[in-house]
Image (cartoon, rainbow over all chains, first blue to last red; front, side, top):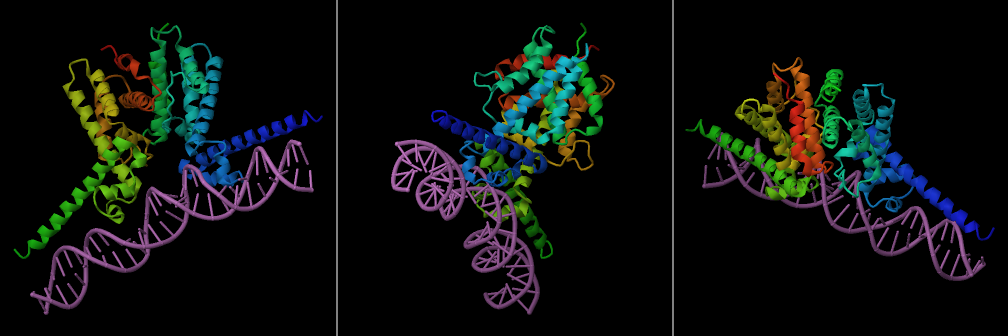
Length: 195
Length: 195
DNA sequence: TAGAAGTTCTAGCGGTGCTATAATTTGTGA
DNA sequence: TCACAAATTATAGCACCGCTAGAACTTCTA
């Protein structure tokens, strides 16, 4: 017992730490979605988790580090959503299914989507230091265009860019939501090639 | 003379006011391009124009009002650039010309482009309250697709969305700049239809 | 159970956007 | 020309921000 007890204590501490970290991320996300990112202050977060401010800096380097963690979580979720949409799509409907899934993700969590892209992370897509969550998400698009056309990478990038453009311009109210259906339909047609 | 003098004084004051307003916008833009938007503080701007802070609030409602003014200026400039590209394009090269002009604008003034879109202005595109600068810019794209296809509005929106996506993902380092040429080429092909 | 090691909090620094109020300059009529 | 009103500008301060040094406390060990 005596040799295992310290381990169990250490494990519990680690669990607590991770739970608290998750709590911080969750609170940041919730507040951002309800009141916008400017309301996500370090003081506010420390209130939410009932710890003083310095505790937050034991988990993250800075406020921006917290936002980055939220963004990573977002990329993981969108990656999973795209994978699901890709795999469950009816034959010939893959592009439409993935496009809809992407836009629905962006529309249902606008603050999350905002932080995923508006944050100027120093995280290039095709870099060695790119987080796996980001790689995975982009891989879903790449997978979709494998075999179709001569440049699947470039095509995937354009598909992503188009979806991001629609999502971003919708989020910032540049596009009237009324025409969204038509928009998606024509977008899908643009990226559907005769087999 | 005596009845016109007060007018001349008032005119001079108005001119001074407008000059100072332009100076504020110009300083904000310069600082943002050199050091990023977080460096554009009200104190810093008041230093640049050698007036105290409250003077700035005689010109703009808030810091965000200053950014909005810069953004409007940006929309005016990109509108002119797109118009020029559209009108001077060789036959059959209009889409390519306009796309290149758009991306070059975004790449050459990244901070300006950033504020034009990252700012969540309450300014829908197709609204009555949409500033004319915004209308004009979008009109250039609309003009391009008039007659082509059945839904020029939707097509223009998709074109804009695609360009914005490329510009934004490039600016935030998600796209490696290396493939930019290929990207633009394929994008132009997507939006070029057989006559 | 005393002390070491690890945690957490208090309190404060320099900065931010913004503004009430004081000081100053400017234009005007006697 | 000059006193006075009106417009303009500056000073100084508020509440809040991100962040952190050092004090206070808790937990574990011997």
